[in-house]
Length: 245
Length: 265
Image (cartoon, each protein chain N blue to C red):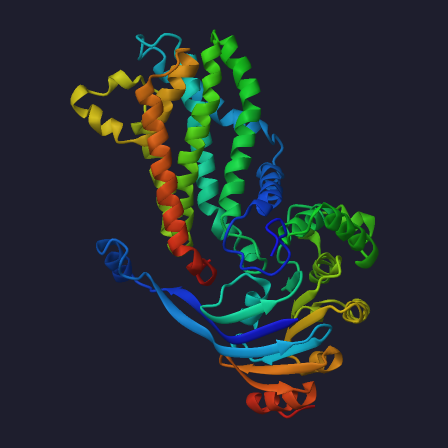
């Protein structure tokens, strides 16, 4: 279950220019080098256990920031975050992968970076073998020779291997081919049936309508609409100024 | 929340004991990556100081007749210099290089500088074996005191980590730091008595030489390895003090800037 109350998130952005550095040094660090830039202005959301929740929004509306807070990468500056259970992020697939290492080595490293223990890492390896559809030859090859789709397969398998309680997906399924996408949707359904809460971020309504039970639309750091995916989607398309297909 | 469990939700800013396997996994990756697509691999960590030694032997061995066994003298300095130069540069770049991971996984940023230090140490300890052989060939006579190189190395690592963390944190905001460090390293190499005996520094400038932290660490390494002495209390005290000051500085700057990393990698 996920519960956000009055969530505010700031990025500390560097004040540019030499003058700011000089001021900072001359004041022995008491003058601020960093400026606050608010990205989320008081978000309230509740996602139930076993629910697949979609988040629609334009580029720069704060979708990814919201996901980063849920993943524990960023701390909120105000408000409360409650996320129950083990979180698995699938933020931009293939992101933790090390180009010089092969598929197996990456699965192990990524698993550890995600906080998996020894047994979980072993299960991750099994899942990589069974789920990705990559051949033994592919998995022995450095990841730098992988196609984007192959990276996505590896990333998805690593993140979903250990039946996480909360799965965060950042518009990543689109890169795989149709067969793999279907496999991903099937795996998502399977996880949902086991009670996994899924937060699915996208700027593409079709995907959200396909797998989500409910959705929210974010605009300029605020939740402007929550409800049925279709209804939220219509609102989102009004914002974009493009009619729903 | 249980202290030993990582994969429940919690903000990732702080390093906890449960992160130990993460640090080790990243350090091992660094060890493997360092020489992954090079033919000579690990040999490079020996070759670099040895090439310098060769140059030194040609140019300087006659210039400093007062130094007994110049090859051993120079090599004891070069081994630790080379460790310092490579590791400081690696730690400096570690945060920026790991931006893609830090932006998408809940890993405390400090894992990456720490892992670079461990990878560098692993490499150095491994290279001690062949270096000991080479030193013996040049007539080095090890004593029990030579083992004091290990506690000295511990202090040196704390100093290196503090300094590296400071540079790495600043480098997130100003990439000039990396470029500046690349230019400063050779300068440090020449002002530190590595190729030449420290008594070459004129008496009235000795205090300037003393301002260089590396001077004290290299002297300590020379005392225990080259002279086979125990090192004086003042030497140990001073190097320990410098290490703690560096660690405090690096840690404070890292803590003050940590929350700003994510927007500026």
